[in-house]
Length: 510
Image 1: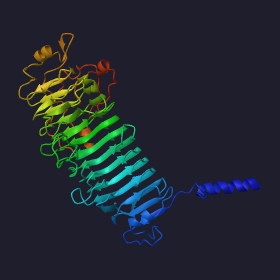
Image 2: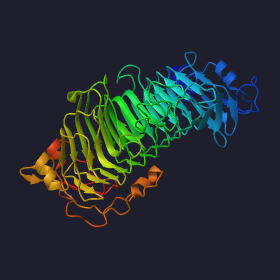
Image 3: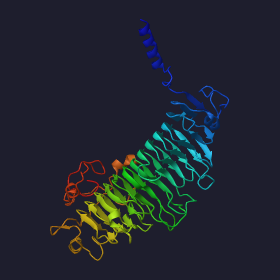
Image 4: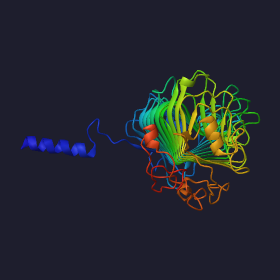
């Protein structure tokens, strides 16, 4: 009887969290009308971030900022605090952390942290701020949701040497170096299992103090692995990079493995006067086993898709770009094309196995593909794409690339590559689009519905983007090559618009 009673008491204590180690945490509240000598409860809240930073936070604690209020200072979460903490707004709207020349929030060496429904504002990238906005360092199991971050000289959001992070609906704008930056310290294992979705990086012009490297990126991931960027938008970034040289890109990756960028829009990104890049998407130096798919790029100053390798990077190989659309990209920087291939390493073995298939590249202002003077490469396959250019379809030396099953169309002259004005003459002379003594490609006007008129800015509109559907069913539509048979890779089942596709289909949209 006594044993049964004792067990009942223990179960009761477990249920209510009464035993040490089972506490559910406390709720602390901040209100601009509060008092730092208060208890920190909802009815008796604290007033300042300085008071919050004095509190040693315990496991499970939740910190609530009154929606619509402005709080001055930097939220610091460090070794004095325990894991499993939430930082939130309550009431109506977002609470804003105004940090002036300092970071908005710094979290170091923590697990199970939630930061949601908050705004962070620095003094501005040229007005005295020299920091990232929200900096998450050496952390694990992090959730960042519905944040707005602006006015910081470095990245709006920095995830550094962290793992298992879920980043959603972050609006990072008017920062310097980048909107969102994921980075390790030394190699691809430093940062991993990161999801970035439904985020927007807009008008992050450049870091005025960065004179040795690029700045002004939208979303950038590097020294990491297993990163998924999906349903994100990057626009109007990079226009005030303070240097001439390599430049920013809307959404891209370098020195990373197993990165997937999908269902994203990158449009009207820029670079500084005399600067390079300014493109839409980029798989850069040291990228391996990564994919860009179902994305839209338009009117970026650099190429829609940068395929780059730089000297000193680790090997670049086994990367895929498929079922994407590019419209009028690359007019300003040296790309002058929708796709730009560049390799400063000088080693084809370090720049190998690229699979570029079922894309639409439409460029009424320049070329479809451009190979830089430094572009030596290994096995590059361009399969079942539709390439439309103003005049010359390809510029530069492309001898190491393989072309099969593509449709080629020059707006001003039906077909033009080098000195050739017909596909068949080019195929016979160069051995491109040529196998078993037959031409594999096509020279047909694809007759798109509304080419050159992209103007969508929301990812939920991608599924309705019909501009590059065909007004009639051309003879080539299902006469492309078998990608699975040629490459050994499993073919996707859906096209850019989500329509079911068949083997041999050409282009990104049925």
